[in-house]
Length: 357
Image (cartoon, rainbow, N blue to C red; front, side, top):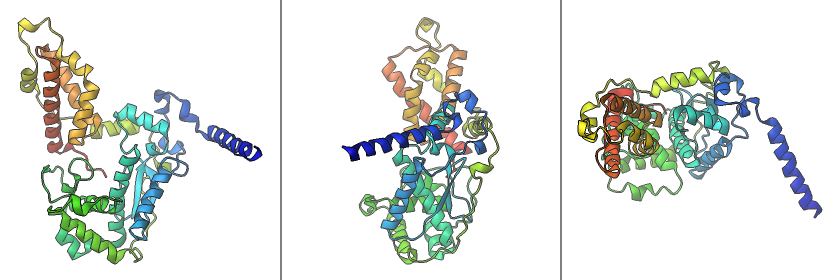
């Protein structure tokens, strides 16, 4: 009884300590929290949900007998900097309150679930190990993936059915640049029990996976050539407020397309005087907004915020044209999903898509 009571007491004390240690901004409203500077948040990886996920990443490297371990730090986005064999992780990943703010501002929290986070971490560690060992300089690497020195494209036309690239992150990301092709292929290779030999059998991408399998065997016991522990844009140096940060981020992932939806909207809804008393198309789209956004995000891999901007333009134009719902909702919802997907893909191909990891 005594030992059980002591264990219980330790849990109570630990819980009380955690409550006392919670930062002052936890209980603030979104509006008040937005006025905090990022450098003043005081967030850390240690003790956050990120800590066990990074440890899991290291265990996956250990299981592949790779000695390299990237250093990780909090910044304002996911990235692995050029010349630095480490991984920057967005600050909102360190606390659930900041994750809620991210969702309210951007409609999603990129990497928040454990599986999603691990997928991104595996991708980023691919970049980090590429930098650490200078793999991209090797002729065989260049023969397999292309030259890392080629500029990142302002836009790229992904081929969804191509079997020359692995499929890991959304948006057929491996097709955007040789560096991303390597990082995506590494991420598939390093994932435990990924069964890549079976999954990619008879795909040209299999040769890339086999190359990485052979390459990692040759370097796994070697010391990295680049050992910089530099942290690019760490949270302690980001002096902008959260309000400024999200204003800039919304511009970056927002919409400035100038597209005309009229022809497609007039196919989807009606402007005929005979239908003037039917439910409005704008109300219909608002009612199904969340579902439409979710489905199209799954199909396209685009940010919810970007899709929502396309939807906003559609809704505004429906009001201006006074469009009405004149067919069965089930049919119109299906067609609206298709239209929204097409418009989002047009936006994707216009050069505004994300190349951020």
